[in-house]
Image 1 (cartoon, rainbow, N blue to C red):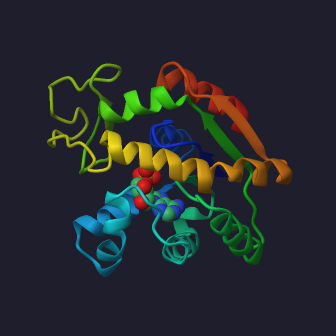
Image 2 (image 1 turned 90 degrees about the vertical axis):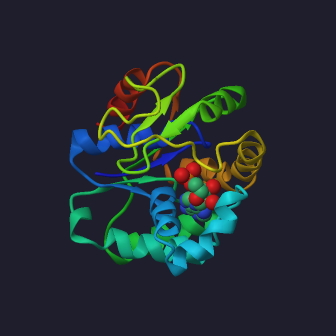
Length: 213
Ligand code: AMP
């Protein structure tokens, strides 16, 4: 099963991708996570990506396309994968199709998680993430059992550097301009499904599962 999760920042792509990964035992490929890890490790990729990420802009297409090309050829992707945060531009989507075609593969379903702008801002400003295992929490809707501590691995939770109001607004602009056109792109290919990403993560997950089944 090969899936793409589309949707603006804060739509819950990461949360749904993790749940899908556990249920279907296929890897979650998050370009955001890969890039954050590279920044943390101070690799040349991280150095290249950091300024774009901190200001809410997209990392250049050729950088992320190269990452994905390498990743989906790895052996753990044989049974499928979940793309979370990729593609984000038409060029990325075209290159993805090209790479998959070369491998005689295709995307099965593109799940578009639809959410209102006000809700995105509320979700992202209250969000904290575990830098070690990637678990996500929210001050009101999904608080950790102990404040500031990850329920899963016990590490200290952190707020993402780009989860501040100014950068969130920039990320939303970038989404509208560069990523939203992908809905039309995949609609034309006939594999787009839209889900209202309202309610609990579990409710949304059951709608996603119904769609991808
Ligand atoms: P995310 O965790 O998906 O919200 O991504 C965080 C940041 O990483 C984005 O704001 C971009 O700067 C960068 N990024 C992640 N995925 C991509 C992508 N597919 N294309 C370009 N930049 C990306």
